[in-house]
Image (cartoon, rainbow, N blue to C red; front, side, top):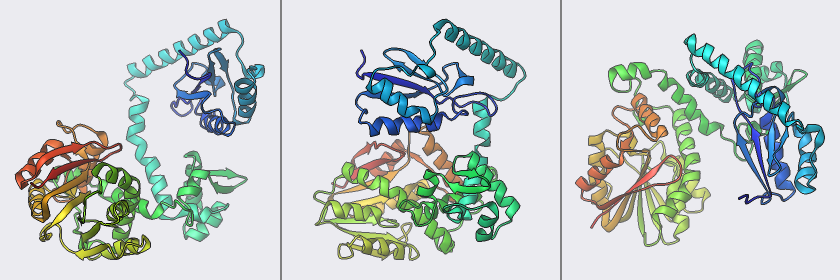
Length: 453
């Protein structure tokens, strides 16, 4: 069975640097060109494109196979793509100059390359060498640090429409030699291009990393840059059992607070529609947004229900940021802010929905028990508490992001962590909530919901 007229498999295998592979020979750009050309010609329902692993012709990549005919193309560049799409996919004519026509020779080449690969792998294993993927995991921090440093210096904005290393360094106030080294590394990572000594942003860098672009992400990503410092203390934290650099929110710098809330607001922009749909805004008259940050979730719920009124509780340093977003959304009459400490203060009463997003992971188990008791007191009869957070499976080894986030709380808080659905269920029931359930969402977070009878 073949539901599409053509099914295209194209290799994007990544191998150790210096080893021939389709990715090293530019398969990424060829894949991008294929997707654009297929879409531009209205062939999305006719041609299925699947990215795959090695086809065994690594020295002649990028390689692709077109079914049902089983035509093997090699050395396919982005410039070849329009011809393949028009000739083969629209007119049914094979592009002979790129096609492998001798099946016996093709088979022998693939088998020879496979045998060479196996010999090399056995030699590496016998020598006790780390596998490439494991070694890559260990060294991934280098690429992360390159990008974060460029973001801290706002180098992508400095490069703008094009700049030499000396020009970018002059704008950034950095050393020209060191700046060129950094810019060269960014070219290798695919975020900049370089021609005759002039650096330019690639489309993805121009979209997300250049000031003034619609999707400018640098302010939010500065939170990740700040996390770098904390994660460097992980060894000491494991020895100590808690953060060795902990600062309470009021003690943190304005720069840290701005970056943190910007990151949370950006994340909420993606998650809020999913959460609102899963929770439902119907019948919610009053909402309490505990630690509501930028106000993104209150805004999303208020937009979903024109009768809903929300109150955001957060520390004084955060409230001006929330108020700005609320004003921009035109919801100042329906969303209020209140200064408070979610660790100690009472929350009031009579709320149909008590919402706590990205809060529980900051707290210890005992702090969460206390928080949820105050949430129960704040909920009206029939009201719900909704927790959004990274929820671990029973043995706490999955999902991967949640296990890593538990360590993020180890290095950044006194007693925070990621918690399992069983732990949340026990705390909610202990607080007095009934009908406790987990709502699984697409993406890294889930919901835990309980109702006050």
